Length: 165
Image (cartoon, rainbow, N blue to C red):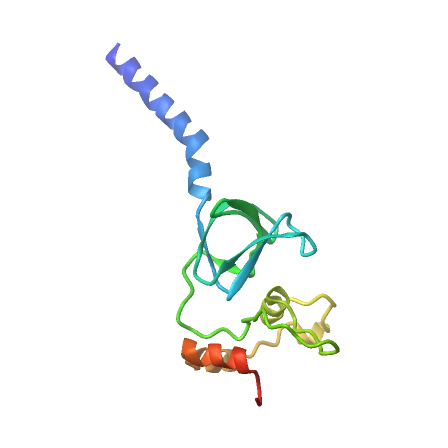
C-alpha cells in the first residue's frame, strides 16, 4: 500500500512539473541593449508605440513569435524586436547603434531607426546581397570596434552636439 501511494505521489508531482514548469522556465527577463527600445502594440514595425524602455531596463518575456518578444514593462504589455533586447544586462561597451530623439530641421535627411541600424550591424538587409559577399566577415574590424572605450559623458555630448559642431 505504501509503495502504491509513493508511486501515485511521484506521478502527480511529475505531471504537475510537466504542465506548469515549462511556462515558468520560458518566461524570463530581457534587458534593453539599445539606448531606447520601443514597445509596440503588435509584432510589426508600423504598429503603434505603447511605451519606450531605456537601456538596461528589465522587460518580462511573455512569449516569442519569430523575431519578436511579447513583453511586460511596468503596467504595459507589447512587442519588442529581438534586435533591441538580450538575456543579459548591457555591458560597458560602446554601441555604435545608439539613436537620439533629436528633432531634425525640415529638409534634413532622417536618420535610420535603432531597429534598422541594429539589423544592418548584424548583417541583415532588406535586399538580397550578392552570393559572393555573404560569407565575408571582418572579425578584426569588429574586435577593433569593441576595444574602443568612450565614457557615457562623451557619448552624450556627441549625441547632443553632433559631428563637426
